[in-house]
Length: 168
Image (cartoon, rainbow, N blue to C red):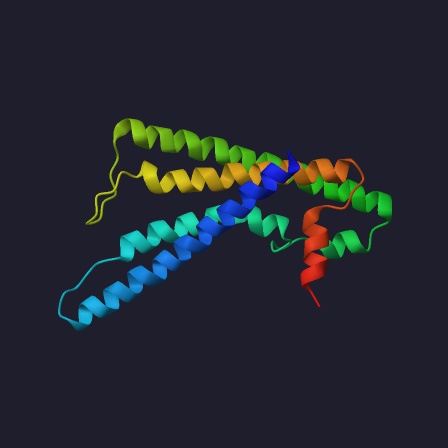
């Protein structure tokens, strides 16, 4: 199970990178088209890509130790209190992200059901870009739950070991 969640988080990280590259390509197209007197509006598309990249990168960044943590508090606490603090932080994060994932998914489903379109020139069904947000939140929740099980079993969380190996 752990390997599956890690592969899913890595896959979402690669998707996020692809969406960031998509923003660069859309911006380059807009610049080149403007030079030839053919304005192309890519702002809306870039906004969709940015939202997708942001939420799809959450789980990968979390597991790799890239999110801001309150390690300063935990570092000065005794070992038993530090473990309790880590468990509390993981459970609180899981509840928060789970709440957001549930409600964003319900909102996306309503958007699909009502046939809402984006208000810009593209008129994209809004459930399409919102689906990337849903996927990113659900994979983040799975990653948090995975790390919570590691902490509960007495093992160091991946976000601690990966963060320690990248900071020099």
